[in-house]
Image (cartoon, rainbow, N blue to C red; front, side, top):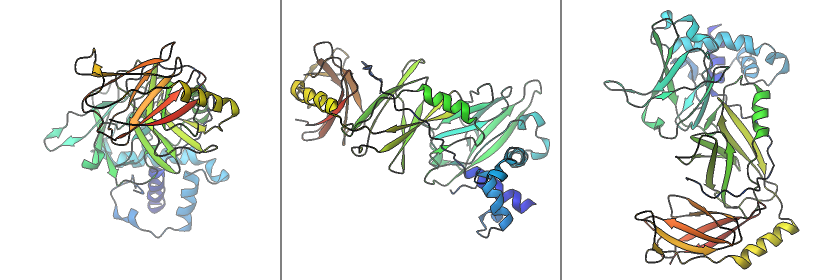
Length: 395
């Protein structure tokens, strides 16, 4: 029984069920400003390294992954028992764990490359994560914000997971005057573990959240992608050409609406699917965007951008002193009320701005400026959501 249990725990901890939503609606509003292994999450037991898997263990794996309809019918009941035993084994005092600390618990494996993590505790419990230093707890601490069902998300945007062997999760049950500390191991990086999702997160709720999001359209001419989304998140991830990419959302954004901006590694192709993973309301919401064809109307919009766009000369000795202290302002022109996202291969940061009713725009940059002959990419999105990317050489 123990072998089948540990085998199933091993599989459960490596699961990252990425449920693809649907969100192909265009956002025609122009934003004026953007603030810019396999693990074995298991008991530390060498037996889990054994590559020999019995037929019974394989069946357990299939049930855990929902691969078999008949097995998945009993998955929740079995998973709850085994999850309790797994989490209890991670406690500093396994035999003294407060029973209510294990209610509704679901903790998956964490990897060195995990960026968004989704888990569950009882909604009435209080919990936080932190690293343990050589002389006690470190100053890094994440207080978990849980929804009504106890689900929470953590974005490891500023945590160096590669430098630590484990994360401490502390759960406090109200009224008990005690805390239970669990040592969550950090496993080696593995492709696909950038996003770890709670296995039993309700699909219907996630689907409703997905359908509520309207990310901007993506065209084959979109290289710097910028879009708003409802709610707030420290970061998000996206999957493109079977690879995961992670990005932090700009700090200082309001709590009601957040923007994200990212350079694609290459121009997308018409018909290609790009999936975004956005932490919202304690869940990881997925939105799948299909790159749209360039229609006749889109081509006319792109032609207008070429006719009406004038880029400024950008360089160290160009531009004018800006009103923000040490910034330098560069002035250009394009179609009216457009959003302009700027990035470059040799630039560590991204910038964005918007044009006014007559198409004028101001780009404020800070030192260090692009070097001569550096390539800058300007992706312009007009009022109707059509985009075109221009390559401009710094002077």
